[in-house]
Image (tube, rainbow, N blue to C red; front, side, top):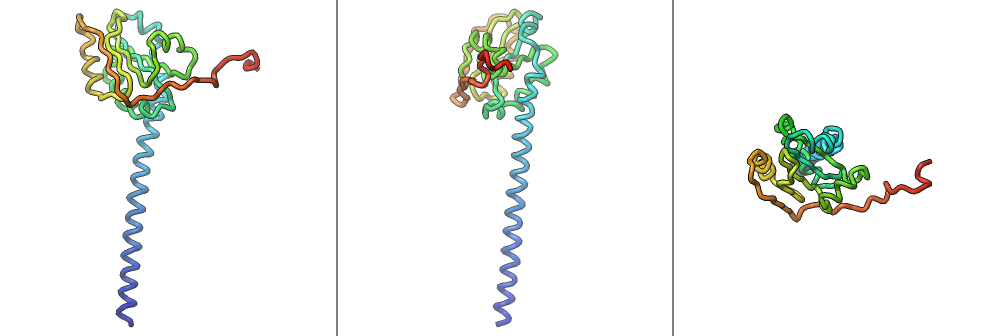
Length: 182
């Protein structure tokens, strides 16, 4: 009788240890993924503050990286660390413009560049000619290659679309009515 009770105690201890280990691994994973998600959300929220004004970007004789994004866009969040790394690397030689599609202020640019899926990245040469358009999730390598090609003179226009993108939602919360102004 004593031997079976001690086996049960050992099994219970081992089971508690295994359950504790599993819970620890799950919690650590959630923390890591949470930090990555929060960092992406933070980067995305700051893109607008880090942006060069489009009017300046298209007139200062530098190539321009223009991204249309939204804070609710999962693909935008996923790409935010890559885009931030590109900005850190190239911002001395290239204008980085970030336009939130939920901001009515940018409606004319959204129409002009036919934005209906985000993220959408448009690359312009220093004369303001549209060289590349990337729609949806992209590999950093492809964007980097196009950025590096901005300095070459003769470049045909290129559009690269990935099926993984967010459809722009109609933004009814920003509609203006006579009663919306207090």
